[in-house]
Length: 268
Image (cartoon, rainbow, N blue to C red):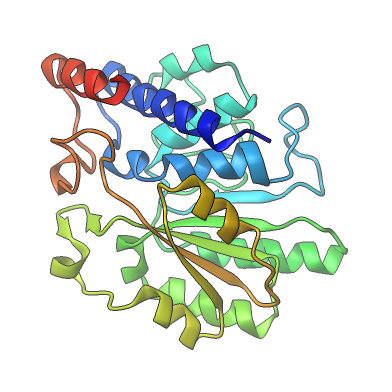
């Protein structure tokens, strides 16, 4: 377990790595990676039962990055947790690298599902959770979804089936940053109350500040007898003033001047 203060320091390191990876690769998704930093750090360093030296351990907890484009934060945290060397992050999105633009479970240690096509993660997570229950495993399944991704109808089919099969070992975390590819979620497809939607499907729900490590920990440790949805209010592009809440930084390369400015702001 890491203290909240250590995790806050690591969050700055992770954000600086995200910037460096995308800058060196000349492509990648910064905005939605920056919004999920504290969530993934807490999951991998303080909460999930995993063995970096044995990534296929049968009774491990599983994680699905349903918003599969946010690999800069995913790979950075996997490296921080010890699944592969941090120096390998330099190969992000480069020819022959196992750190591709979207995660590949056949190539990258620690990746439990090859994601990228939005809307699929909760269905797959539900299947995993059901399978673990049938095997008598204590493993849990955590699924990180983007709020723009909730436009996909498959998400709500999965939400229904999770309650039908009593999947109390399934935890959905919504990175509720309010911004998607080409605008705000309210402009593109208004979601209303995400928490109320999950409640109406029969889920237990927690609503938190997704950058507050203490709130993240409390939500993940809630005792629940039904599938749990954690609605984490976050800021797209968190930590860099010219990126925050700006849809242009969903998947935009960063030039030298912007990189230096952003890195200075993150590390101050």
